[in-house]
Image 1 (cartoon, rainbow, N blue to C red):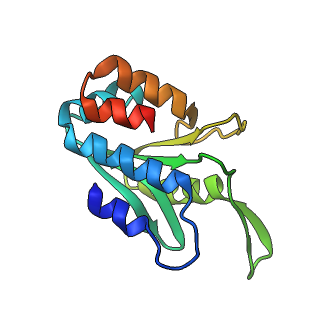
Image 2 (image 1 turned 135 degrees about the vertical axis):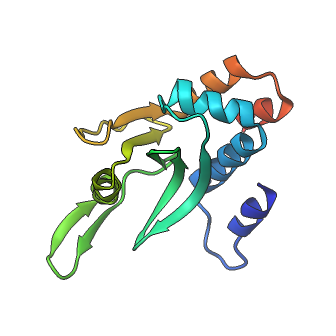
Length: 164
């Protein structure tokens, strides 16, 4: 966890978004508390596997997924926002506007074609209503995560994360 946090500190004048720190802290917390990770994945996210891997900042082509959780035959993407909104890019070749979540759906389509069950979560600090009908899309807020973690664990690390 600490190595990933230190990577976020840039030596130049570029500011690292708060959501990157929040992402690394959540992934580090869950990675260090296996029971809590399993409860979070199964109870909060609704995943069915018994074993999960969790990674942050996973690159698929030109897209970087904040959190990727894999089970035996399922995969879950979590896009985190704190003080920003969904990114929109223009595909230069086709001049088509692509929303960040649409690109993630295309990546998840590939996993779905391979037989994976897929889920996509959009986690925000503030409300930003999104409409998606694929990959069991669900919107959550950081408040929901904090509330779940608080109910499930009395670990000092959890308290520090919630305070952050």
